[in-house]
Length: 389
Image 1 (cartoon, rainbow, N blue to C red):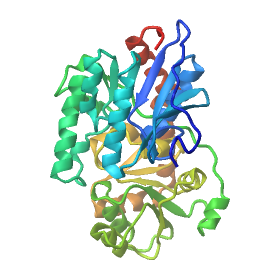
Image 2 (image 1 turned 180 degrees about the horizontal axis):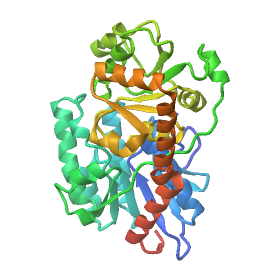
Image 3 (image 1 turned 180 degrees about the vertical axis):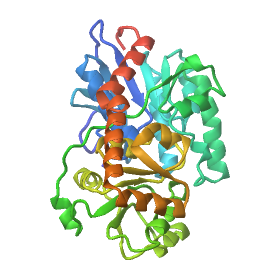
Image 4 (image 1 turned 45 degrees about the vertical axis):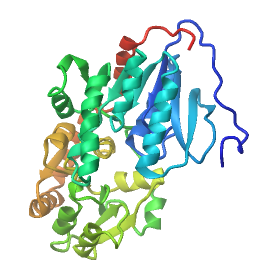
């Protein structure tokens, strides 16, 4: 359905009261969140700023054709951009149309992700202040082919040059960016999450599970997320608990087939689950949370695991070690994973210590109020009280 067919109108120009700060958020699929970490962050930040008197405009990608249209959601203005193209091409078209629309105004822009950072040249030409959250080191991921890696690498550089200021969500991402620009152009602010102190049990029963009888791993089925090593290590012998694996596994994908072939009868593949209540139950009621991500910055899944009070077994790398610190034990391969798992299953005292340290780490660094306040203070540095826009 197009915007015209839905009876919705193009966004109107609003007269902004004197003294109101304005922010435009680009780079996500929109709010409320329905896709991933950046959308969740955009939702929390936009609601936080709106509650503190900001005018916030979020660009939202829609399927279909037709003119731009606008509406308001919980005090946040939304600019909906219909895009006919699918997949990455559609994202690029959406990002370009959002950037050209934002460039018609004089408001501060926050771009989430650098995948089309080259478009920010238009904002610089127009002298529009622009902050970019540089996300992870996307071009280093094994899943991308040469063309995609080149595109991401070029946009990594473009974002560093074209942003007025950069946000890194992890000290190691900041260190990476400092190879391109001076450190005073970068602010490190991690990702946030809500604390989880209860979760529905009925959704577990629907999956044939009970609290405390399973471990959970939530990750895309890609080699860089260590799914094969995790399943191999778990399946090396009977465990007396189940391993619940979330994510899409397709028989046409060789890696997916290898992961499933390595699984013992105690491994349960439940598919991709998007129901928040079910995901929270699988996280909160698990014996331990498994985090196999090898690259990236502050990963939302790991932060959410700490916020749920999980004992965590994480892949041993510089990203995960900073996030979880003493709230996790670390593995590097399938055999090593099996050893770590044996240790914490046999030692309830160690498991309790992991939960305690993980909760403390979460409360120190990753609560939404603290993260969002850091963003607001940074944004205030780059925008004066709003003029009519």
